[in-house]
Length: 222
Image (cartoon, rainbow, N blue to C red):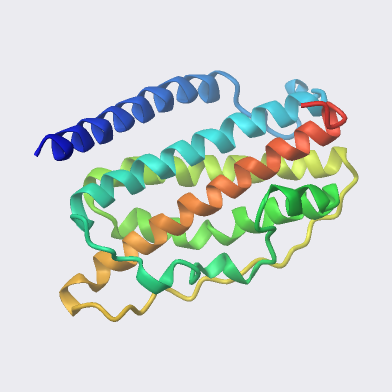
């Protein structure tokens, strides 16, 4: 019983810290948006573009984590829902590095293209989530969708400064996963699966951008 209470308290503490961090990053993002093309304020350094893009990517990852944890607490109730579908995200067809060592071996244009592909691959799934998820999550999902669109614009500007051609291919999304669960739970499972995949991919995007900034701006001295 004591262990159960301790675990519950630890989970609540983690969630409280996550929300606190999310509020802080939200303030940073809103006060430092990526400028719109054509604006005089767009004449900024590549380092500034990376800094702003990473603030947004980190914010998206915090949002995706908060949304997933919220849904997981309310829906999964301790069940191992993901099972064998962990690697069945629609973006799994992308040849992404498995660890930091492999990531560091990629050329900067390949890393930037991966970020671009991952972002574009989530346009349609996020639209689906904003119409199919529980009502209390819609606002955060729409915010994640909007920031993902903004980040795509930022990546386009960074690629222009780096003279990098981005790969236009991105994995298509063919709709919710068909899982072997009771019909009454299939819709909730599909949402659960998408939220898990979005959190996973948003973490990759954030890490790739941080490695790129370290390489391009700080000459790997970070």
